[in-house]
Image (cartoon, rainbow, N blue to C red; front, side, top):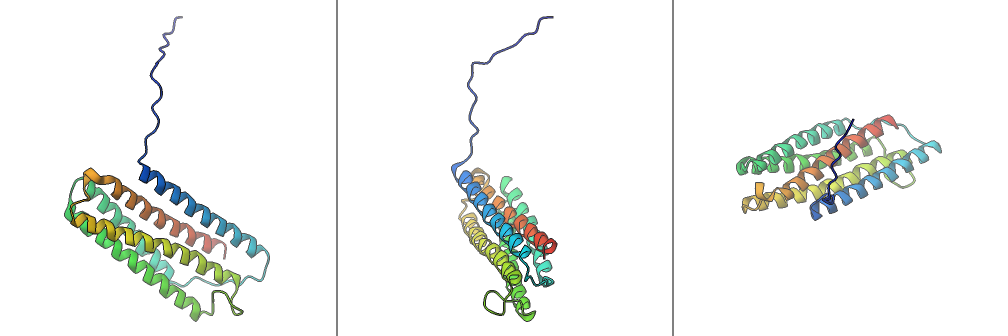
Length: 196
C-alpha cells in the first residue's frame, strides 16, 4: 500500500500577538503570582495557630454581585465595539465604570463592617486572619482602581471617535483586564470562604 506524504518547505509562521496585549498578559501573570504568594502565606500562617475565625460581612456578597454585573456590561460594551455601535459602547463603558466604582465603595463599607466586628489590620488588637482579609481586598481594590481609570480613558477616547472596530485592540485589552479582575475577586472570595 502506497501512501503519499507531502512535505512543505514553508517555514512555520510564528504566532503573532500585539505587543501591548503581550505586555498586558505579562502584567496579569505577575498579579496572579502575587496573589498565589499571598495565598501560600495565608495557608502557612493559618497552620501556625492563633487564628481567629469570623464570617465575612454580607456586604462583600453584594459587592460580588455588582462586579459580576459589571462583567456583563463590559462584555456588552465590547460586542458593541465590534459592530461599531458607538452609542451602546459609551453606555456599556459608563455602566461598567459606575459599577466598578460602586464595588470599591461596597468594599470600603465591608472594611467598616470588619472594624465594627473588631477585626483590625495590624497592631496589638489585630489577628493575622483579619489582616490577610484586608490585604487581599485592598490589593484587589487597588487593581480595580487602575481598571476604572482605564475605563474612563477608553470612555473619553470613545467620545473622541478613537475607539471603534478598527481600533479594537484597546477595547479587547480593557475587557480582558476587567474580566480578569472580576474572576480574581470571585476566586479570592471562594478561597476566603473555604479557608477561614
